[in-house]
Image (cartoon, rainbow, N blue to C red):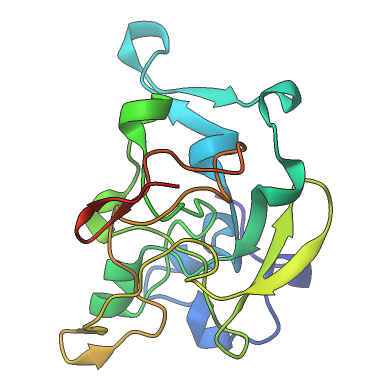
Length: 190
């Protein structure tokens, strides 16, 4: 696996320890500082030969709201792994607030270690790049996430922890709205 040996892949606000592990795996490119909207813009579906996973990039014509579709953002990696081991993994798979496998045909990925949400590491906000090329700093709530009301895991506080598979995917799915958004009480109607 390629290693993070180019500062382009590393947010300068991260300590070197954010990218180290006993086995060195955390220094791999897939565990860098920034994540891609993998679930909606180029996900994996179990439809390859022999049932293997196959990549399905999204065609530009399928995106209706370029200025309202997250492309890349600061990523923390799987939030449950960070809480238990302190290691970031799968940071390249920036997950939307809710993995909408029922409506977009994607498979879940690495969810045993929790979602990989946008990381609010810059004054409580994440740096976000949209498909039309503009960038913005946004809170997790502005991105559609629902913050975890109990942000501690194993006695270690985790800044930016979100509830799993709840929230509004309007800024993620390419449509600019989310007819299936969910909060803790059920569906949120747009």
